[in-house]
Length: 348
Ligand SMILES: NC(=O)CC[C@H](N)C(=O)O
Image (spheres, rainbow, N blue to C red):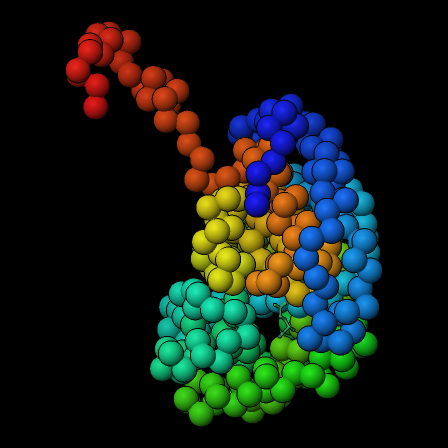
């Protein structure tokens, strides 16, 4: 599914730092997938069904603050599950690595993002912060006295990641409030297992608001680039979270960010990433930058089809896959000058 045009990639291929021709590569990825119309727009939250399936925005933000845009980079959509990554980072910053590990968990469920069975199969554990149960448990840990203050901390925290003031999309929020009985049930189930101290419905309400924050593909790229940049927003220069928190967040995005497709994503693309049902994806290249993509048609797991393909293209064309290595040249460069060339049969 993620095969990309070898000739195009060879033209842009590079290793090490992001190449100067990055803007051209972003444009090539956009052009390549703009005509792809596989997938379906989410409709279980009624307002999402009204999204224009033609929209496609692709942005790369570098850790030096450079931003490269193609297509509908400035079109607004709701952040949905991508908020989970950044709320997790804020909570991890507040309560620490050990506490989030113990309270929420860090293992993939292998099941859809809104699975109730995953909770039941795991003794009431929310499992990880990137599925709904774990995200609701994480939002409950936002350190504030009231749900209203929690929401404000979430909104201002995610705004710091984006480098601009983010606002609630009231229409999306109301649409989800009318239809989020399943998330309310997940909150109640966690409470029944003693995994949620706060009022579950109040926590689910803050979670629903965080999902309805309005962002653009450019916002996602800058938010991801902040995680790539050790917690400093590369556009504003402001520190948002620590480098340790970025490391923990990116580890969770790698293992759980694309739900039950996380393994396949890592196998093909090799970058920590997070998707949302409105059609957003953020993919992070640590120390280099991030891709923000928006296109509303989704695959069955709830991941944007064009967004995935464009990320795959960029990962390959720019040499971003974290697991790529060039064993032969590296081995040659450390071989002592004086050592005899290997003889037949002496090779490992
Ligand atoms: N995968 C998603 O983006 C899901 C987010 C959505 N708000 C929900 O809770 O169902």
